[in-house]
Image 1: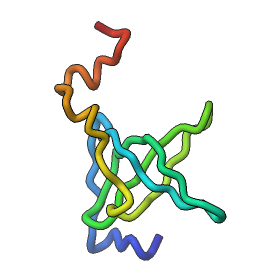
Image 2 (image 1 turned 90 degrees about the horizontal axis):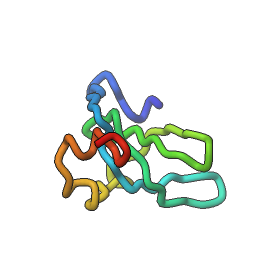
Image 3 (image 1 turned 180 degrees about the vertical axis):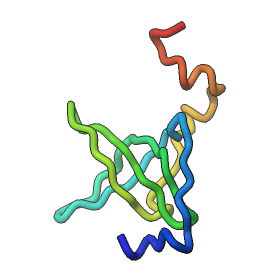
Image 4 (image 1 turned 90 degrees about the vertical axis):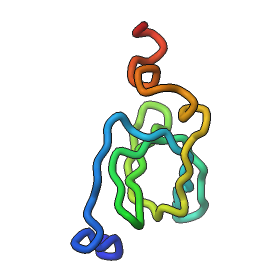
Length: 86
């Protein structure tokens, strides 16, 4: 994680998470996942995503992350309440 240089690029945190699509690199492939970002720097973002019942979290370069537009069209209350908490 030295390459993230947290000393010169401090981590910022946000809640609720920002809905994103992110490219995650694995040893044999790359996968585009739907995830959320709760922490970021000027150079990278920490992406959290689910694969079945398992939740994963990893840092990726910011160029691997884009916001999910369908979520950005809702206001904050709609994003935090969820579908079943009206």
